[in-house]
Image 1: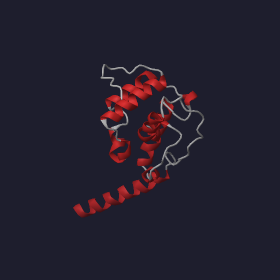
Image 2: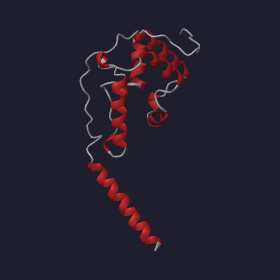
Image 3: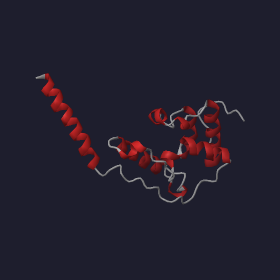
Image 4: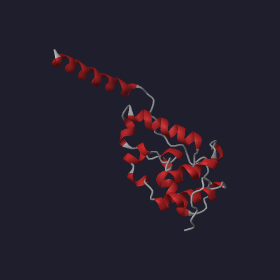
Length: 154
């Protein structure tokens, strides 16, 4: 009896996985053209942003292999859509997010999110790199580096 339940349960899981691949959401891996970027304060800020932010906040996403397999493809597509709609370094005129928060969420470690960093080791920033990126983004975006953290100059 238990073997039958496990067999039918396994078949059901496999069937659901196969059916999920048919759902069209998450399959479009296009990168629109780069329209305009902010006036970066330095090449280092852009390089750090590219390393830690561009996979969700630009039109230069590097689509990983797992982004072709549901349900991971759904999560990746949603993260990129939300990221681009909030802050898009490749379509600067379309950015609608609250830019004052950007340096703070980088310096606090809220961005990039932990689930992204689990798989993307190159996006992990040291404490000094976080501070450098937060300061550079504050200068680039023309917003204050808030939160009362130390604002060491490098």
